[in-house]
Image 1 (cartoon, rainbow, N blue to C red):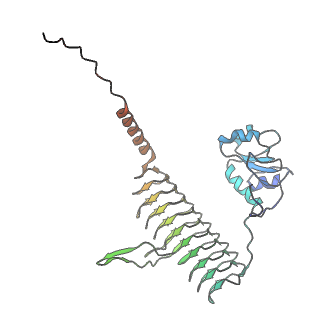
Image 2 (image 1 turned 90 degrees about the vertical axis):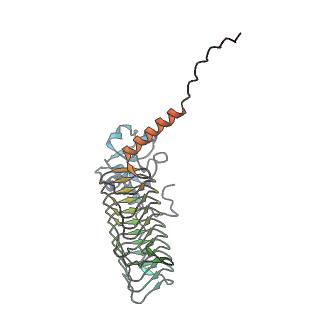
Image 3 (image 1 turned 90 degrees about the horizontal axis):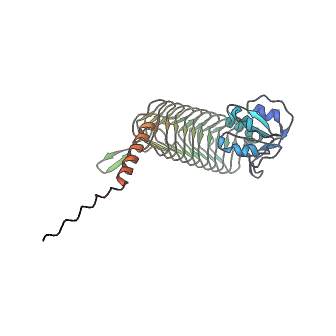
Length: 352
């Protein structure tokens, strides 16, 4: 079920007008809605949404009290269901769901098992969980939540309202406000830098930091290396999925979206609003331009222009890639076509 009360604290019920307002829509109505639910299972006192035409049949059959959807789909809303119309239904749904399930409140205080350096500074409104370690000169801003087993290294700064998940570690980093670091993430460790000497590779000191802007999310078990001689930077509003690797000196712009298992090598630059699909690899010292889109499992070995859409490995413009695939398909089909057998030669008369 959506919002199992064992795991999620629910507010409400809320009026239809309040739910619509949360979705960015002005709509009068005092119908009381108890929470969000999928189209197929929603009841008369629940709100649902539709953002994909493939589920039109589910919309036609829904029993939901209200549905958030695009105006183009309003004609398919069944009788008895109230349409909350917005041109951004998924965004409206996210905000309406957050009305019923806001982030859990911070319980200010430091757990008795936490270890806090004498010269660390922790705002009195912050929460520090069991077995967390806060090292010397660290600064924890107001309303931050530090989960169990978290390690905050010396000199680290967390802005207001940050959430650090269980067993994450942060060192050599300065975080803005409202940064969410999910469980097991590693931020600020040494980058992969070495020089070859006569006895093999020798580690190059990594002397930079990690700078993270406001409203960034860093997924579970993601790793962000600190810079070598300059800083690794993640711009405001960026979203990094689980299991992402960010190398040293990488610069990620504002509101970029980087999907699971992406690897970005050192000194690459990802400009504002770029999107990178799952398992893609970005070579070092390359630039992915503003609003560019990189397909899943792409191998980017050179600069990608702003606004471009690249796929494949090695990555190239999507249209060029698909043309090559079409040509190869035609060649393969041509080779597989059966070869007509030659007409049988007439029997030669036997020699007399």
